[in-house]
Length: 450
Ligand SMILES: Nc1nc2c(ncn2[C@@H]2O[C@H](COP(=O)(O)OP(=O)(O)OP(=O)(O)O)[C@@H](O)[C@H]2O)c(=O)[nH]1
Ligand SMILES: [Mg+2]
Image 1 (cartoon, rainbow, N blue to C red):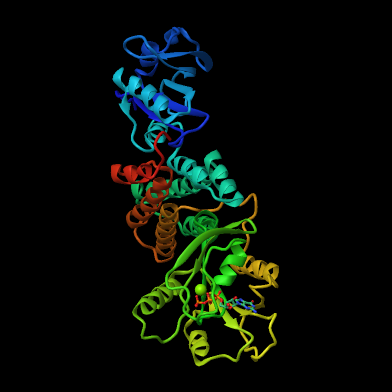
Image 2: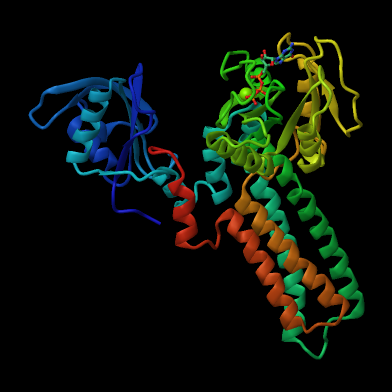
C-alpha cells in the first residue's frame, strides 16, 4: 500500500533538550529534504548521515543539523524517510518543522509512522502494539515482554495456531466437497485430538494475561484502616519521603493520595486513603466514601491495625468488609507496648511505620502476594494487551465448539464455520483482518512522531 502524503513530526518529547529529532516519511520525503537542506540530498545513498544547514525559503540558516537518509523500503515505515537531528530548543525545532511543512509535508497524526510501517507490511499489529508498550514500559519485566513481542515471538505463536487450525479446516472442508466419503470416524478422532492440543496451548498462553496485566499496568496498592492507625506514616515510609501529612489527630487524611513506587521489579500505584469511621463531618464522609470505592478497585489492600491498642468496633467492622483474598493485614506501631490480641488472618505482617521496622518483610510479602499465580519466566511469552486476550478467548471458545461438534457429528459446514471464526479471531491479533475503527483506535494511543 502506498500513501500519497508525506508526513512529518517532531519525534522527541516537547521541551528543551540537547537534541531534537524530526522525522519525515513518504514519497516526497527526499525531495522536501532536498529543498531545505544545504547539501544535495537527492544524490545521497541510503543509510548515510550528512552534516549541513536547514535553510528557510529566503535562504537564511535556521539551524545546523545532522540529516539521515533511509530509502524505501529499508526504513521503519517502509517509505523514503529522512531524520533530522537539530538543536533541542523548542523554537528551533518548531521552525525546522515549519519549514518542512511549508515545503509540502503534512503534520503526522499520533502513531502514523507505525501505522504506515504496519500497512506496508514492515511489522504486524502485535508488533506495532509492542512498540507502544516498549515506550511505556515502567519496569524491567514490561520492557522484556515488549521486546519479545516486538521481535515477533507472540506473532510466531499465533501464526502456529493459525497454521494448525487451517490444516484441520482443510480436511473438514474436503469432506464437504466429497460428501460421499464423509469424515471417517478415525479422522474425526484424530482431528479432535489435534484441536484439544491447540486449545490447551492457546489456554496456556491466555492465562499469562493475569501476569501480563501486572507487568504492564502496574498494581494498585491501597492503604486502608481506622483513623490514626498510621496509614499515611506507612505511605511515607514506603516512598522514603514525607509525602502525606501525619499528625496525632484522627481524621488527618481527607482525600485520596496517590504516588507511584517500586517494590522489587514491579511498579505500584500506592494509594493513601481517609481513615474509615462513622462521622458527621461532611468532608470526612466524602473521603470515607472514596476510600471504600478504592477498596473495591485496588489490586491489593494493606489493612492497618494499631497493635498498641485493643481492636475497636470500627476495626472489627473493617475486617468484616474487606475482600480477604486481596488483603494483607498489617499490625502497626509494634515499637509501642503491645495491647491487642492478634486475630488469625491468611497473611499478616508486623511493622512500625514510624521506626521503619518490618518494612523489608512487608515488601517481600507484597511481592509474594502479587506472584501467587506464578512469576513469568524470561522465555515465556506473556500476553499484555486486553485486545489480544479477548481475541484469544474467542478463538478458544470457537475451537471448543468445534471439538464438541466433532464429538456430536455436527455437520461439516457448521464445523468449518466455527473454525473460520476461530481463525479470524487469531487474525485480529496480527491485524490480518481488522477494521479501520480498530486500527485508528490502536494507533491513536501512540505518541506523536512514533
Ligand atoms: N509509635 C508509633 N507511632 C506511629 C506509628 N505509625 C504512626 N504513628 C503515629 O500515629 C499517628 C497517626 O499517624 P498517621 O500516619 O497520620 O495515621 P493515619 O492512619 O494516616 O490517620 P488518618 O489520616 O487520620 O486516618 C501519628 O502521630 C504518627 O506519628 C508507629 O509505627 N509507631
Ligand atoms: Mg492519614
